Image (cartoon, rainbow, N blue to C red; front, side):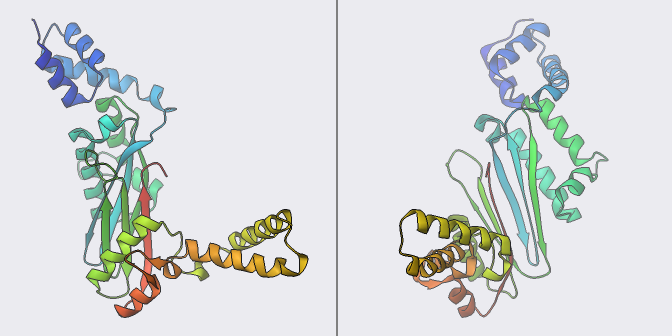
Length: 275
């Protein structure tokens, strides 16, 4: 049975397999399209373990926020071709729906959990590995619940799914402020909500580095203490959300924006594909 270039294109779009693999499958299936799909899936299953060592630097961030609940996950793959394909995005939708239903924020426990169809998350991902012909990896998940959650997703390229996602939880309803703060977090990548959340060892390490740097720069001994404290303060402001200058108005801090909205930031999660 003969096949056409359109058959190869269709098979590639449906399975996300390489063009050469699609041609080989159609040759092996003697042009039978459905049989070729099965061949690619079988070969994909056999190749899952071979792909374990590959790097998954592409993918997407997908999230959903409804009232007092927000969930988000990062699903990785090897190439942007797969990342922007329907099959990969359907898989991400399926995993997100399950995360929204089970509310399991621990990655290992979520991977071991079972979907409504009786398959575990890991089994579902393994099937994705086989069908798409690439290593597919669920890198992280986040769940925030109990008070209002705002969401922001950002595309770094118009032809790719969102690569950056932010969930931010506020103490009370402040939809506009929540959205603005989520966008700020996406752009400025703070690591903690407030300075009190920064581990003491982080501060100690930064202080030691600042002191060693100041001495290496030949700063006068009498001024080293002041220089060190200034640099540590700058470090704290850089990684603490509430002390950062607000993205939309640099004359204000994020804390001032929060105060004006008469709320407080309880927690946030920021995912960027590959980081």
